[in-house]
Amino acid sequence: MNHWTLFRAVALFGLVAATPWQQLDAATRKFIAADSSKQRVAIIDEKGVTDWEYPIGPLHDLHVLANGNLLFQDSWTHVIELERDSKMIVWQYDAKQSPGNEERKIEIHAFQRLTDGNTMIAESGRGRIIEVDPRGKIVKEIKLHIDHPHPHRDTRLARKLENGHYLVCHEGDGAVREYDGSGKVVWDYEVPLFGKEPRPGHGVEAFGNQCFSALRLANGNTLIGTGNGHGVIEVTPERKIVWSLDQNELPGIQLAWVTTLQVLPSGNIVIGNCHAGPDNPQLIEVTREKKVIWKFHDFERFGDSLTNSQILSVDGKAID
Image 1 (tube, rainbow, N blue to C red):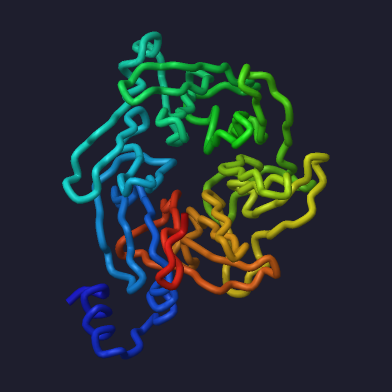
Image 2: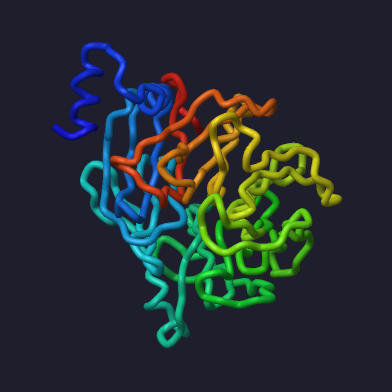
């Protein structure tokens, strides 16, 4: 009997497993997560049970849509919308087939279903954001400003804002840039190194400013996951840091490559803690006072490359 089978058997009787916090903490959150090292995207229900899963390749973005379908990638170039129960592909975009991309090295690291039904896609290697309609036609394109172009590092997560602008993380440049609808940079922020020297690698021993995620908050500030900077920072439009979470501020936890961020209705922040090794949780929910109130730590179903997640419900209440 393997560890996970044993845990499930014990859990049926309401007993405590050898590492109870790993699974019992997970039992109050339903979420979707993806780990390319395990080649799996899966939904975990509030009891900690795998509710749904699907095989993947490389992945840096995913969404559960309002209609219940899932929008994610199964390779660096192929984005699909999947009907959950039938697992039927109902929409797809393959960057390799897009005109002008045939001879290029292209990678996709961000996409988003828009309110008009189109899908925004950031193409690294082409240095552009496009919007694709339900029939697969490109209906809009803007060029991105990239100082150190590279098909794997041009972008990480990018999101279209309510004002029609695009907030883009440029991993290779160590910067977040906001573009207007014409492609003009209207705001930017260089992620600081805080006086430290960059260190190679992906884990807790590495260091840099290769940002992965950025969210525009209701107060106008921007929340940034600093990637191998091992932290989260909130900056004002004037580029002043007004809140931060550093690598070793959470008791018993080290942050490594900070990936996805999600702000819950409570105001709590869910942090993706990728490449942090088996001694650290892969997902962490913290209050603004930096108190850990939930964490997910499971190296059976997911591994050290859990890059993306989305909380779907908290204590039975769906998250919009």
